[in-house]
Length: 225
Image 1 (tube, rainbow, N blue to C red):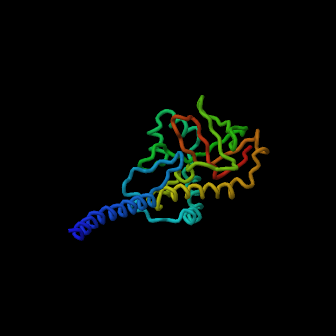
Image 2: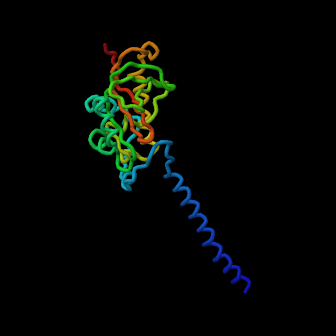
Image 3: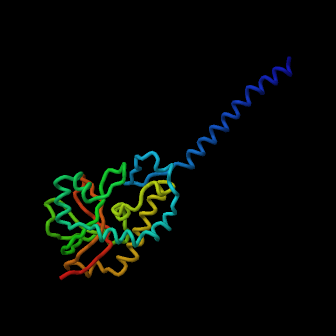
């Protein structure tokens, strides 16, 4: 009787042990495939995006697509006065006509061209005193040292979440593009010397209706008379 009881106890313990192993493995698998979303980023709602992701390397992707992205912003840039009037009148309609927004995202991103006099603004930015700017709306552009946001990535329509393995890589592709803007567009720009002068800035911004300001990531900076 004693040996049989001992065997019975072992039979009951083995499933409990195996269940624990399976549970630990499941938790590890979930942790390995879970991406933390950076502040300000939204995960597209398309359920197939992550499944069908092609796993593009974000650094390589940025290098290969930078010139095309610059070309698209320059090509699609809308005059500021025209664009902001449309946005103020009807943000959704303006976004459909002029902007880019990946499925599941909340805000539209735009390519724009703004001409005006430059002045000091928030840290890392210059303000643009541009004709056609509605009362209560601010417009400016980033000058560094940090170039933030994903407007340059998003306004082109070139990058979609499904191109990358996860949200982290999707975010990194935007960061790499911003770093290239810093190195290739802003490296030779003297913000202090530009104050009080008239410039045309071509760039991209994402419009949040709750914050009536357009902060451009510049792709082109040209002094005008």
